[in-house]
Length: 190
Image (cartoon, rainbow, N blue to C red; front, side):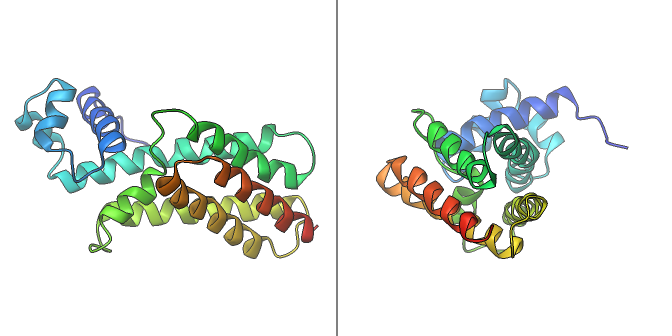
């Protein structure tokens, strides 16, 4: 049975999510999160032992919504499986064109915590990426793709590679190009 999340805890996580995504985890203080949530720092620490726990909660809260969004893009796309895969990229490119888009929160957080591989948020990011890859392999297998685990891993590399280059060039055309490459990989395995 899932434990209910208190409204105060949700307010804190929502405030942290907004600030961490916009500014990065290192640039956001606990004081800023408490202020954004309209609470005292003491109340924040009542709900979270540390900033690290709050960072982990931020990513954990993004996990399932992100996975469901990608699956819905895949399922809603018309055409063959290659078009369904390409639709994930097309929707990511559309999102990247929004002025508030800052890239993949999981990758950005992992980059900020690169010297702390055991950090709970890094583990959550790893789990998220693995869950997406496993879901994608299953979806590809359901559509008769040969070597679905290999293809899923190649597609994850294309997604995360396009996210990385987007942080440098700020050009969503890279995500579109990665989508075309992913569709080509899928077509080769039909």
